[in-house]
Each structure stands twice: as C-alpha cells, then as structure tokens.
Amino acid sequence: MIKRIIFVCIVVVIAYYAGTQGLTPGNVIDWFADNDILQTLKEKFNEIFNLAEEQQVDEKAGKIIDNLKEKVSN
Image (cartoon, rainbow, N blue to C red; front, side, top):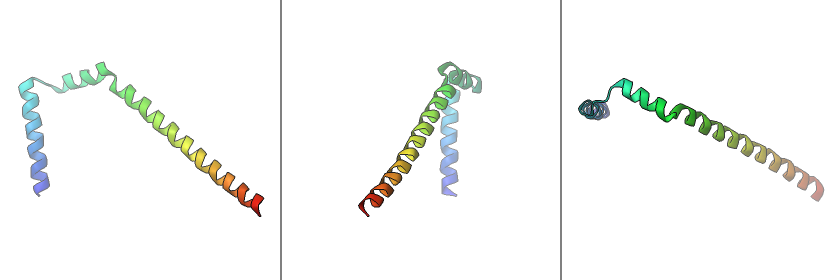
C-alpha cells in the first residue's frame, strides 16, 4: 500500500511539473520524433544481439577446442 502511495505521489509531482512547463503529450511525441530515439534504440538492440551471437559462437568454439585437447591428450 505504501508503495502505491509513493508511486502516485511521484506521478502527481511529474504531472504537476509537466503542467507548469506547458508540456503536452504532443510535445513529448514530437521530441521523440525529432531526436530519432526509436532508430537509436533499434540500432543498440541490434548491436546487443550481435554481441550475444558472437559470445555463443565463442563458447561453442571453446567447448570444441576443449574436446579436441582431451582427445589429443588421451
């Protein structure tokens, strides 16, 4: 219950500040469009996915190398 009250208070403060600054939902949407935030997020997600794929390849290659070392030592 306390968490909800705190959350509501934070929302009220943000809404009050936005109202005093004259911010509207249209202004916020325009800001996102002007700064091309969505394209930047897409690029960063692609980089993250590429890094994850590279790490999986490295892990698989490491396992193969370890298996070969075991076979050679035996």
